[in-house]
Length: 72
Image 1: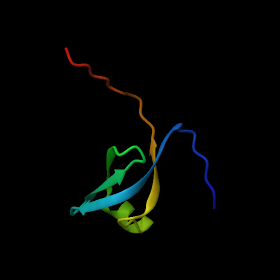
Image 2: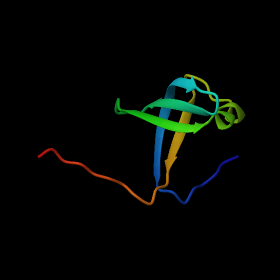
Image 3: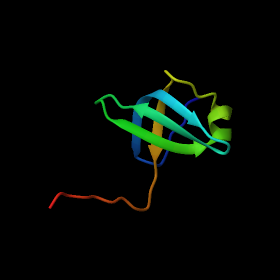
Image 4: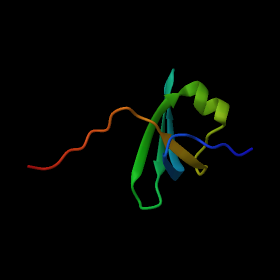
């Protein structure tokens, strides 16, 4: 099944690690340009999606706020 999202910020990556806690999980993705993205999602979501290291996934980012910083 193919799904389209209204969120335009979609990043393709590969899961390099998953750190599970009692309630939450940290899913670490390697992006094609070598950068790393960390997503905090529920443990239930990790298990329901069957996520594992090496999986190719899409991170969909939908936010009402984005902060930008610059060195002084």
